[in-house]
Image (cartoon, rainbow, N blue to C red; front, top):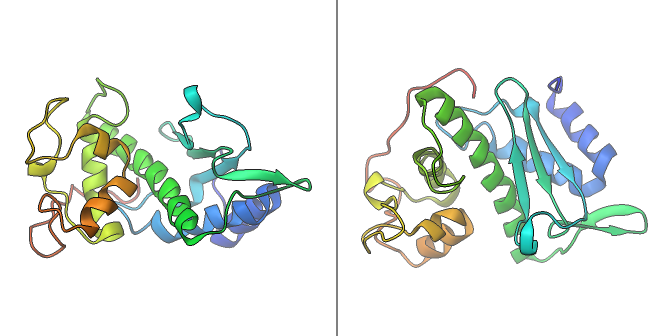
Length: 208
């Protein structure tokens, strides 16, 4: 996959393919891909594909991330995100709550892209799926201060299916960022405000 030449080309291409919904996806990617993590993602090599179909078993999945080294990143959003109206893809809702969730969906999938970079960098392997490993927790920890204004210290990372109460649960980490936003707004002590605890930054690379 060839990267876009500019942010303007990226925005126009997504709008041409998927209408206003596609352009909004590209805007969110441009907003967060270079600022969310310790190392910026290769923003012009990220594409969103929107399709008003069911994705995954039991209709539980909102999106999907795919990206191998050197091939770029694809983010797929399904009928929870867009619907077909008069031959055009539109967002399923326009409420403030939905639009926050819509941005969360993009951020969640960008976090998977960062997770893949960390796994390649450190040689980490996934053993229990895509949301229950060191790479996922590290990627979320990088994004937390910038996106939610709280830290995710390593002491708060889950320690398995039966994790102590002093840590987050695996289910909470699976549903980043919405689940952690709910905890942050209630001043959960496992997620201290930015500035109250040191932030761990990984060795920097030019681009992820």
